Structures are given as structure tokens and as C-alpha cells.
Image (cartoon, rainbow, N blue to C red; front, top):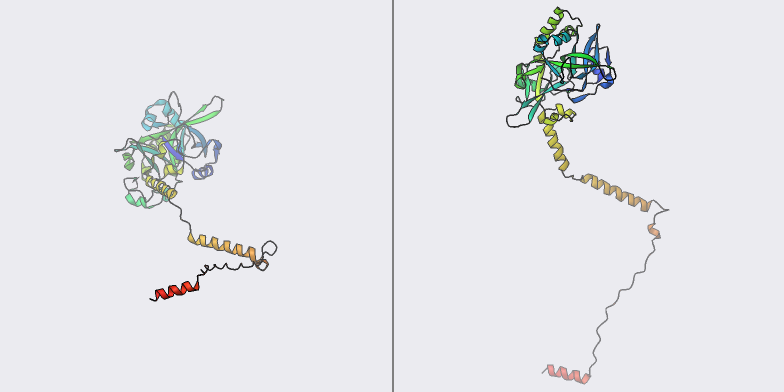
Length: 341
């Protein structure tokens, strides 16, 4: 199953990487890290001998179906006459960076999301992920986790599409992604997965607009071949992507990286700011020079030291002597004589 994806490539990059001639209704495409059913996405189709990018809606009431058909099983394509007839003439490839799947956690009721993308062009998982968080089908094990994640990978998912007209009688398109049984390490995440094509020869054969039985059977054989499993890897991301309103690069970051960055930002927010002592000294020195220049150099607006009037110093106040008591001299002699007795 594939119910959520990411597609953030620029329109010009998509055109160049798939070798398309044009991108029809390009303004309807909105890059997103959290693509859900009903969104308009770039889809590769073949018109004559040229590849064309068409903006199509993911899912919808295809044929007699009354529900949102975002996926269709490969075995259903083979057994259902209506879908098989649609497969004959309306094959396409959906462009995406990668897609999401959820695993029910053993110790948590919240589903744990994984992001699956291509490891081509040395775009592999982050070295901070453990083996339990990162699953690679290339057989290299932890070696695949030694390379830094690149967020501009591209996968092409096989799909069928249908043309219809909206309420204003305008021509529109909607598509359903073809799914098959999972293989390799991806079986640990989900029992089904979208069929992904990465071989140019297979892509050309699949997009062939011929509808004869031999071509159709050849296309079925292409979809049953799972060589593309070796080009895929997955890693756990944060539950941020569980909410369809969240749409940022954090959705495809490895969970450990996202949590570490979140923790660091919180610690930085509450960390007290310590002023730089060197800057304080410099500011004081500059302020001192500024004040000195304003006194010594500005003769018109400042007060010259030579013009400061001298004030007369007040004389110190002398402490008055205690008054001398005058006594009778005869009495004093009497006292002296008495004390010398």
C-alpha cells in the first residue's frame, strides 16, 4: 500500500531528469513533503514518441468505483476486465522523492512512520541511524548508513490513469498507484508496496502507448520483476508526518536527527546569555574616548578647562578654646598649699 508520499522536486528538475518535452498544467503542482490522496502530482505519460509531464490528481472514482482509489493491486489489474482495459492504454509513472509507510509499535499505540526512497546517486541513509532504524535491500547492511542523506532523490511509481471532465467541462486526469507484495527488508515495514521502475529500458517499454496483448504482457512482466528492491532503502522518521498539516523537510529527516535538533534548540532557548567581557571593555573604552574628545577638541560646544573659574577656598573654622575660669589668687594658693600637705 502507498497512502502518503513526498515530492519536492522543482518542475524544471523533473522535466530534465525524466527527459520530458513539456510539463502541462505546471501551476497546479505544489511541492510537498507530505502528499496525501487528492493532491495534484507530476505524472509521466507518453504522447507519440515523446515523454510529457501531466498534472494529475492522486486517487478518485476510477471507473465504476465510488471510493477514493489511490492504490490498485497488480493481481486486480490482471483479473478485472475494466482495469485491464485501462492498463492497456493508460499506463503512467508517478514522480516522487519517496513514500511513507507505518509500523504498529510494540510499546506504543501510535503508528511509527518510515520513509522509503532510492539509494541511487549515493543518496543513502544517515550515519546516526542504527540498523533497526534503517533497512537497506542492497545487502551492504550498515555500510549504507555511512553516507549522508540527500533530500532530492527521485522514484517513479507505476500507475494507471483515467481522463475525465470536471463540473466546468474541463479535461482532468486522476491516477492510482499499482502495488504488489513487498520484498526484502521492506517486508518488515508493510506487506505491500508500490511498484517502482528505475531501469530506462523498462521505463520506455512500460510507457509504450501500444495496447496489443504482447505489449501488455511485457508490461506485466516488468511489474513482476523486483530488481528495483536493491535500489531502495528505508529509515524511521518522526511522527511529525502523521499529521497531514505538517509540511517541512523535518518530515523526511531521520527520527534521531530530528529529535536531537529539537532538543538542542530547546536547550539553546533556555541557555542564559553571558556577555562577552572583551566587548564590554571595548564599549567602555570607546565611550571614554568619546567623552574625552568632546571636552578637549570641541572648543565651540564644550567647556575648556582653562575657562573654568577658580573658586576661593574658605578659611578653616577654628575650634574655640574653652573659657578660662578666673579664681581668686589667694584661694589658688590655699589649694596648692593644701594639696602639698
